[in-house]
Length: 428
Image (tube, rainbow, N blue to C red; front, side, top):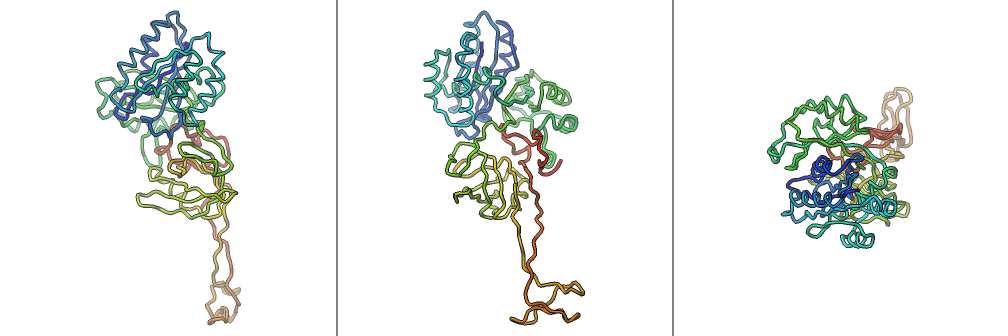
């Protein structure tokens, strides 16, 4: 059977992946785990999410399905942060006999959960219509993610995936500062990048894979294979690890992005890939956010932002000028596109007018008076008008990304790109 679980954490603590790792061990009492567990990130713009908007799925071969269901329900009741208003757990249980019948339907539901906004009623109605065993707690919003995670498990070859090694703290340490050797994370990055990514932020000298909230996660290493994330994790020096799990995941895949041809198609709480021309020069607002406007072929405009947490990425954005052709990836809230990546496809030419140079000495001529052109007193050469020259841009066409400290879970890092015009900004 496949078990999907979501929404057991809160902003103050717990983590659905921890419950998944715990069940991964405990459910072996009732059968055999058939494959790696799944960690599925859903639409990152949903306002009622807790933190990372992640659901998990496990696949178990068992002769005791009722005992499995009872155990999972009991553990959710024990570990979920029910006191938090945003925490509304859900669990879904799919029997092997229903795999083929539900495969296509739940793949479609997965894609919708990652890209769109789904109401709780839709998930409950689907569960009822399809006869799926489930358990919702409180308002049952977690049933959405639980169904989506099951859709991912039913369709392993139909979506791009990466891996994450998640290490968890001993329970008595939850809520206390994490004891880690920061240099060991930089060492792990040096030895495994680009097969792993977002372990550290070199430019800002930050360790970014260590959690800072009261949840059970000690660190998470992301990469292209189970072997490489385990290799990197083995290099980390830190406090004792209670348990760990390697998840197959849609993180780092851009699965959330919707390609659009026009700004008229864009809606809040969705993520897009959009091409247009810069129509207003970047401005730095109070707080350090950098905002500029982009216009599509039909003349519609949208504000685009490199917010303060994107740090050094903002210095790149400030170099844009009206007329630059760009392709942007990011999420839209309150009518503004929050940039995750930018592809600069073509640079606008910028010109300036200046006094002509003397053809003999090479120095700029001086004005000879109003309406009298320009003259070099030394060489007695003259010219009637100023000359127009192109300004060299301190910017190159290519694709750039925000630094690791500002990366969203689903955003595909450039370390995974095979293109030649990729620009890691700033360069590693």
